View 1 (spheres, helix red, strand yellow):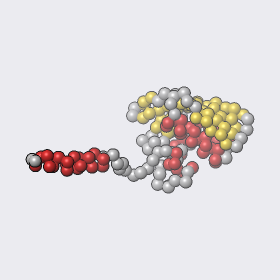
View 2: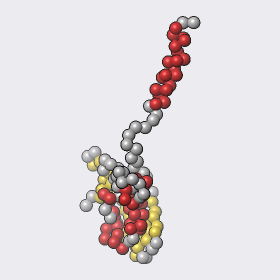
View 3: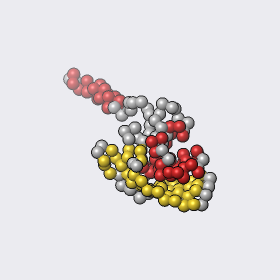
View 4: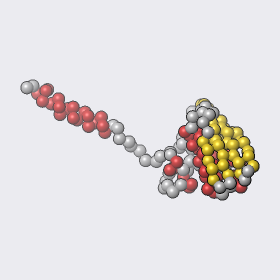
Length: 147
């Protein structure tokens, strides 16, 4: 048996181990899922607050009529829609006497940023409202509305 044929199984094992090692992840471990929505979650304060750049979102002045929990649910729906939802698919939220649906259009590029137009139709104490706006994605995964 030659030296090459004796080394081949050993080399194969080494190469497979190296290939599998490449499947691991490296980094800070900070996610951009809903568990990392900052002060509105129980996550660590070292994670980015992905809702903060939205401000009051498309709720505008109506946000003052909502409890903090209601605002959080509405803003989470806006974030999930902008970040994950396909164009035209509504994300619904409901809390107490308030509820709403958020729907976004197809993403488009402005410079190096992804942006989306979106609509938030909501009802607070039975009064329906529809607001439209545009937001662009920040490098940290948050979205900032354009004014």
